[in-house]
Image 1 (cartoon, helix red, strand yellow):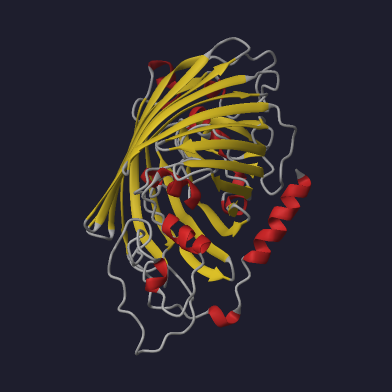
Image 2 (cartoon, rainbow, N blue to C red; image 1 turned 60 degrees about the vertical axis):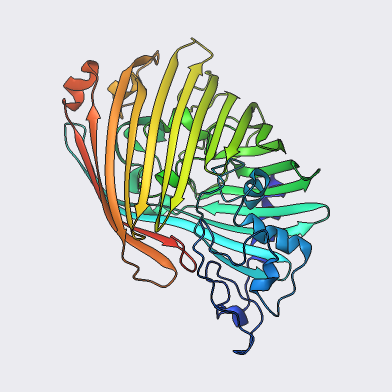
Length: 483
């Protein structure tokens, strides 16, 4: 895997080096940051005004893409990749590879990004950055100024009978989140300075993903896919919360993260998937231990865990999945405990005039194979963009917590046995608005408020009605008229 890692990094930065003469974008494709050959005013087409979800492209994907770019020759492989930018079929959505790992969202889900061509490569870049100040009430509440962020460069090309995608994901959170955590009441999981994290969310690793994907069509409706990643996302759970459209305006993690999608950064991931029509089945292996608290390095380990996932895309606006995984020793504090994780989710996305509505309903359960104890978490996210520049959202959760939370950030006492103690409810409501200060960057000012339903066993520690408030600036790259 170390050789794969080195080769992936080298290939990635080689294909992402864009020459200086490509600095001026063409007006022939408003929805894509493309750089075709110069076109004379007499032959230049009228700008495309069609505002399509994800990528504003002309002509319609069923037509010849080269019609929108006079003077630029399109080979069949490149034409197919451009059609995948605005998927109408499940196979196209998969080959777009805009989600984390090999997960899928509804075909109509928007993916704002910058894009250009470099020889046979199609190069893309998307990201999300929040600069946040959080204030919390109650005995366990804390205040902090920090930034959550991620950056994803991608490169795709035809190679042999299939399509090769190289994708990396990075986060500067090890530098922008001090003390190895930011405040998040009732959150638990992982460590900071050798002690349990309580009421806080750990930062992501600098290397969130280094992966290669290869897709081969076995017919008009059938696709065979391979995924290998020294750091990547196994086939377990839905699209992880940093990349879900329904969570794209929320600057903080979800309380159920460790029951639902905490495996989105795992070591030595290999996955094979077969898609036919509206269904996809995946199986794969990975290293089960979650990343350690040293966030700048690349964690490694033998493949000792496995997962499988069934995904269904019954319509343009719908996606659902059910998945199961066996994890070997995922928690540093409980190295002798293996876990089984089950998740099920449904996503609905609906574009409309000057807006979009995205939703996720998610259940995750982690079961200890040592004592059969279980923790369940439930989540509902809904985000609506309206009148082009405005966003409003909610995240409602009911998350199982363990007695480790009572212990706080203190070292665990000798002989400590973790067990469930009840469920915490969290209700988040937020709003932000784009103000667009920088070219090709959507800048928004926003705020969100979270209130909690506290189980009786925790009220003496947290109080009955703690509240968290976050005020933030959000930055996201875009091209053309996308949001």
